[in-house]
Length: 283
Image 1 (spheres, one colour):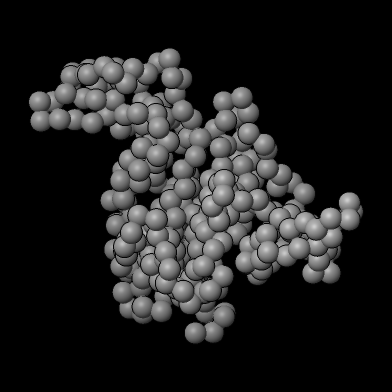
Image 2 (cartoon, one colour; image 1 turned 135 degrees about the vertical axis):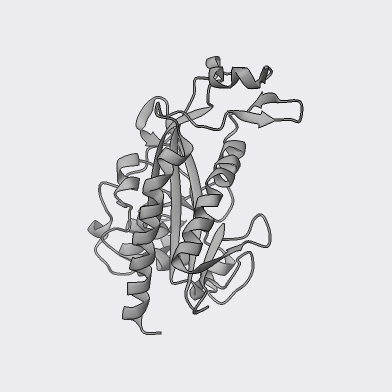
């Protein structure tokens, strides 16, 4: 498959995915912006409120929108392939029903506004920069080898968490109380981006080999990441080599390269190509 065709297929998929995302806000929220999911229902018609824990919220959100994902796949001629294991990449593989060479990776990314700086969100990770990212033919922790995907997309959801003082996770409600239950989240913003478009140059989480995102919301929605002026190839090169190249710093001591400007200088490229707007706010 030639490169022009790959680019065209990727662009068509991106446009179709954006159309889907534009429908999701009304699907998951009320007219007042509240999440329509209020809690868990048992056979006795008791409703138990949802924990505000971000992992729980994220998983329920994924389940909530999954019927729309299946509709999207059927409409556009894709098979939906879910990961074999929980920690595999990506969340969903879309494989063309007509040509299995055509595959797209989509990861669900959910995060919340920072209460003291609402123009920023908590950020998220964009997948590993370990084995499957470096060895593009590897099947370790990935559904299909990385280089078999024509594009790597994020379907993102940014939301506002409700004031914890309004939530009572110990209370049990009845069906007639449904409308009085405070939704744990509200004010959804959905977006589509290729993961390189919203990447930062910092690791996403602790000691794990995860790529971090930028976290200014306007930049995320505009796909205004640190690699905007460089492109996906520089994103790949940087993260394949993250923390592996040693240079001698101004203090005369060896340092690992973990900043994009350092990497550009090391490669003889213009360090000013780093997108100056895509700064990451420290939490």
